[in-house]
Length: 266
Image (cartoon, rainbow, N blue to C red; front, side, top):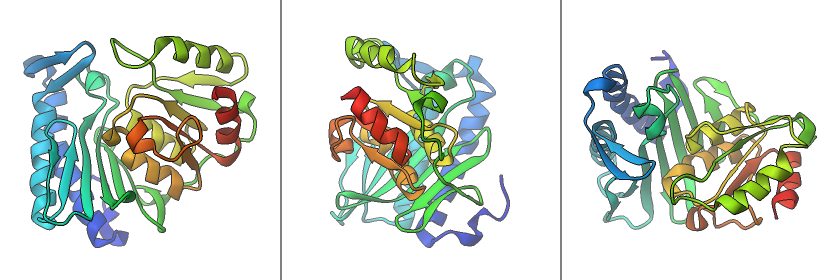
């Protein structure tokens, strides 16, 4: 793991990064032994592995030890009430499960802390690359020790856009195809990597100029919303609203590309 990371972290981010790194050990081990991994099918294109469950169990245990009164909202377990209604952990123990199960090295452990209705701290950890994205409200976004800033590109013809595609019964293929038909002729390219939390982290780091997807869950986007905002970017619903965690719709990018995409996709 990257040394010296914890030197500049707040107490809450120390807890979050340590929990993510502990959960990552089992995920890295399981990724190297995929042929022995037990997998149960939840639905078309939607799987849950023993790695998901183990990761979530570790995260809940570690975060509960540090903040025993906080609630949880997790992908596998669902809602766990806490005695302090002001705070809630939002967890995806393995974002990009399908990539993981196919041996594609693009997935992350994702944690966000919500205070009332606002995300105040977040961690997105890609364990194979040892890339720890983290942010705290009002204190900026970082990749390991490097401060992040969204890209400065102003024109769609220069922009690379991250996208989420419908699959199985998830999403609206007809609407997505209309969006894609508009984008493809006027952008430098689109990318579908299969892990929304990392797509948002890539926007925060300037790797993507923007990202959009619909029909997401809160744990898919909560951490990334704060990362992008603290990196100087804009995050809204695709229609311009600000209820991303409730609607499942997200559009993130720098000031220039975000506004242009919002008009284009409206």
